[in-house]
Image 1 (cartoon, rainbow, N blue to C red):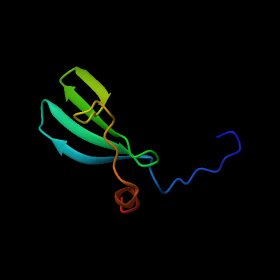
Image 2 (image 1 turned 180 degrees about the vertical axis):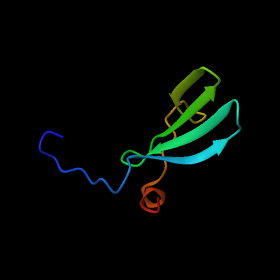
Image 3 (image 1 turned 180 degrees about the horizontal axis):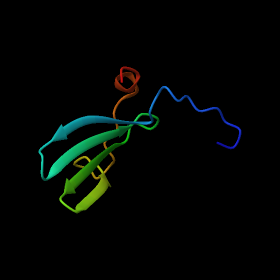
Length: 69
């Protein structure tokens, strides 16, 4: 977009964990920033939020783990 070439072979967001049927809990990682998100889906309702650690800071996957995704 806007003159920048996008690598179509690599998705920016990766699903790293999924649990349940209804409700469903997914953990999604942004492969550029390492930030982890929790996505919850239940019937006709859904929500997405940044996962926070005990100190209230975003949970970030280390770069070496992102390189393996």
